[in-house]
Length: 434
Image (tube, rainbow, N blue to C red):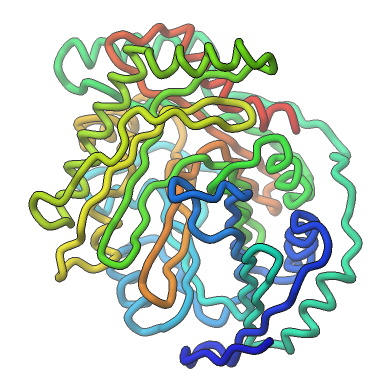
């Protein structure tokens, strides 16, 4: 059936019924999309409640208009939104923080994604149950649907296994945990998210194959595949940074992670262990307080509330402690302002946020880039939903350089060895597929 759209950017929206496996259709659609230089795919992997990505599956393909900048990021984004109607997809890198606060990043980066990239797609594919809606300014929607169904999926075999190195060896990481605790004792911060980069050099791979494997091993409610020419993001994030529905915004920070067990009673005990962990509760409530402060900069007085504190959510490999903070936007606050006022997310920085970010640049030895940034969309109604880029691979096909990072919140009660084990747990799915 055909729906007529009032959006001048889109000629029409055509809906088709999928008779086969939805998962197979999504994979075929992504494989079909590889002919284009710009792709954004967002997938909630059928975690269907308000704690997770609002849209079941969105695939934005091709570039009608785009913005790619490494300065004046938020003002450029606001102008782009004002000048263009319709869906907009993109990302904001962690180091945009340097424009928001008086900060700098002296550390090197091998990846060098633009700091901010957004685009209006030529083709948008939207999945809703067994129905797929396709809108296109490039070719007939019926032809796109036929081409996708005709795709023969490649296998999940990875042809080579790279050597995975770390920019911070175990002893260095343990020593830096002790350094953070000393900063805490001195009163500089009371929580800091310390991360490290793992990398592979001279590695040729099919990024989409890797993404399929990552999504198979660790299906996440904020999964994303992003292609920008030769640069790729393969994301298996469980965490929402910020979303907007009408005049309400939500943030859902994760602080608290524990492994899962295949044995039911043991797995239940692990859930209870995480819920009752004083250390994890302390980490979580510190970041909840920070998020409340961030949201209060954009919301009407008295409307910022903690809807859920210490919620335990289960994913294939880990249990996570997630809290939900919401507030009602003030009328004059633009969507980009609300994002800027909360960026970067407190769960990836620490508290107080500015001092934590200063120390992060001193303690870590690479720029985070897209890691700790956010990927998402603005809808035609000016709603938005953005994730936290964690549990993710960044890959530069031209340089043959692959990178993934992880870390954890360090508090005064942190045990350095336990923090290292948490880093390895968070990167387990990626290390396994490599």
